[in-house]
Length: 89
View (tube, rainbow, N blue to C red):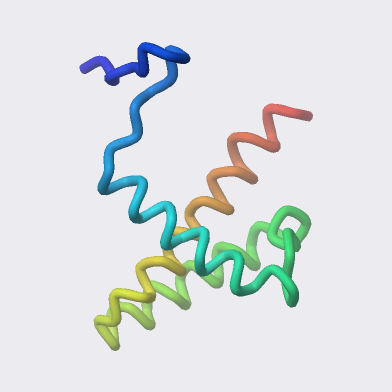
């Protein structure tokens, strides 16, 4: 299945539901900027993996949809560390 592309710049069109979710992820990330900044780019991977497990357990117990944003942000961090930054080496 091929992604829809924008005629203006030939980039994938981001679905509205994904954009809304990404905006909420960014809101959570920006709340922590003063205290944590981009520390996730330098901390050990096992720390991020442990936090992901911790947040998933919190979501499983509390069924609080806000935890899904924490889970998504941790997935983004791990994905970037594993895919984006590894390619730069």
